[in-house]
Length: 407
Ligand code: GLA
Image (tube, rainbow, N blue to C red; front, side, top):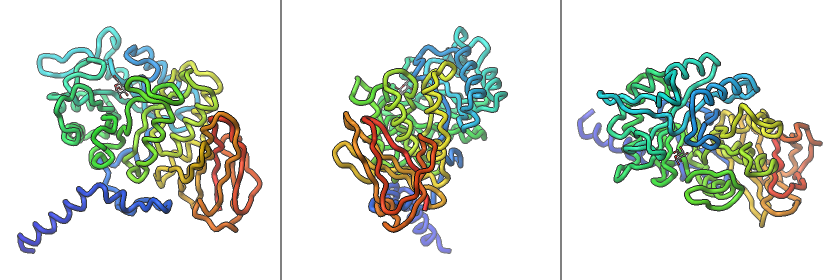
């Protein structure tokens, strides 16, 4: 091959590779077909959306090793581990100072046994361990960030046994996001350890267009807060985040997920019906299922939501297609996620203030109208009478009916 042809081929390859919006064109918004593009993943990890727990939504900066150990104990014994939850992630404020060679240590008052011992403990429970840093000079909580210390920190995390890094975007000045996240991805890769890489730059630089080659998940929005709807400073309620994340469905797939932020289920600011909707909608959007409540002290209603294995199975389906809204009439919405095996997960969602009948026709799901499908209610945990044509249900205010429809 001549040099010129080789260069041309390289240019074409680069063009194809760099043309991230091609994913959007491939995914025909009028069908439920997944993107045809072969998925090039960053590191081969997170082939289904990551599941676990993160300290921020409940504990914010008040983290210590006692809380993290108790959380690991709970996850290993309360059914969560068996249901697929895996990562225990310490968010901001675990940090102490850097030493004279630039290596970071944990806050000795909060983590007197050190992070390595904590990671060992979490691993001994059959769970995985995640940590948090920031691409700027300081984290959002004003602790040392990784800027200028990317290789130091990646090496330190690998030595500690870190399996997951959430990498935030505060105090980054004029840094370019794609470049900054690539630098840390390279540093993680250089350690040789499998580390899921979670990009947390809030969707500012549209990471869905470039994140797939760098990391496994990217935040699509500002922070979630424990409210149904509205904007609260830099944070948003569930409905607002839902509507920002939904249109990005073509960009999700095995190894690379849209991240509409962690769960608020069980934190007390919403009703059980709203939490059930929050969990169901995050599940159908193939969002990471990262619990954000105090799982060592949760009530039965919270447990029932987080441990609904039928809903989790929808989230963890091997096809890895992000579900989306296929119809919206006033407060009545229908959401669909194609599943492996030819079935569909369906959510009938009522945003209104009173109960409403909502229905879905088989043709909307890509099936013939005459098809006799079996239907399972994933919250009632029972099979419904097989019907042809369509299914209708009365859905409570702010509630969902979540189904699996199987031809
Ligand atoms: C940002 C992130 C949050 C959390 C905090 C920690 O706001 O978006 O998820 O990590 O920082 O300070």
